[in-house]
Image 1 (cartoon, rainbow, N blue to C red):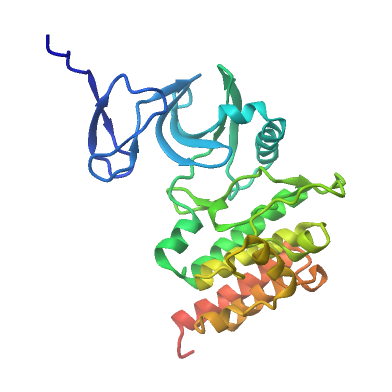
Image 2 (image 1 turned 120 degrees about the vertical axis):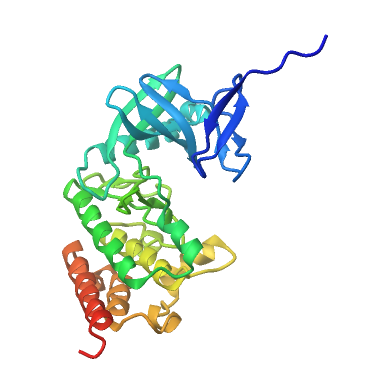
Amino acid sequence: MAEAKKSLKMVPCGGCGSKNFIPSDLPKFQTIPCNKCGHPVMMAVRLRHFELREFIAAGGMGSVYRAFDTVLQRLVAVKLMKKEMAEDPGSMESFYREARAAAGLNHTNIVHIYAFDEVDEQQFLVMELADAGSLDNRIEKEGRVDELYVLDVGIKMASALDCALKKKLLHLDLKPANILFNTDGEPKLVDFGLAQRIDVEKEKDSALFGTPYYIAPERISEQREDHRSDIYSLAGTLYHALTGHVPFDAPDMNDVAMAHVNTPLTAPSLVVPEISKETNEAILTAMAKAPDERYQSYDEFIMAMTAARSHLLVKRFRPNG
């Protein structure tokens, strides 16, 4: 007897919009490549009143899906924690920390947290959807990001970090991949998994976490950190976007980290001569080796970037003025 034909269901691709017919018995969260663009396509999965429709990205802690809130009738992002991570107290604490830290912040440029829940031992976080790529994607695609655009993002991220600081929080993992964009092009700061409260004393021998390409030197050499460490990392992120190169690079990650401590920073304008003097000076000041030589507040950094932006606008639109 011939084998019965498998039941198929039509699912649109979130990448290109083309129709895909996939087996209706495809296991939960399993994806198959779109027949046109290769983007992962999956069957919808229901968690509470959230319908997970499309895989967005995967990270160390879990996977993020585009989902539909059937009660409030809106698109959201759902971050599922890996089940094996749930058995690790350290991973669970990081997941809870991210949820609690971001949930206490109300800022246009910080991704809003809507809910934290568990179904069948599956922990998940429901967040504002920001699925129009990241600053990292933009750097990869464009090589160098437009200076005016970088300043706009920098000003908004500094404001977001200032909001976190007023709630006594340090982000401690600023990098291009943690700046996402929504469909309106608005940048959103994400991933508070490493966030620390400034009023909680850090243990002397605690592990050091963060991305070596953007980490502040004092976090490596002296194992201390404050909001000026986030200012340094934000500036390092903007440096990468402006020049297309990370501030320091080496084959070994330990060498990258130590370069922040020991190696003089190459000025952005020496990498890309077109970068304006004002932007160049703002980045150099924000990335001074000694925290006391940096901007001492986000307001100072924002004012420097705003001034650089104004000079750039005058040069672009009144070149002979």
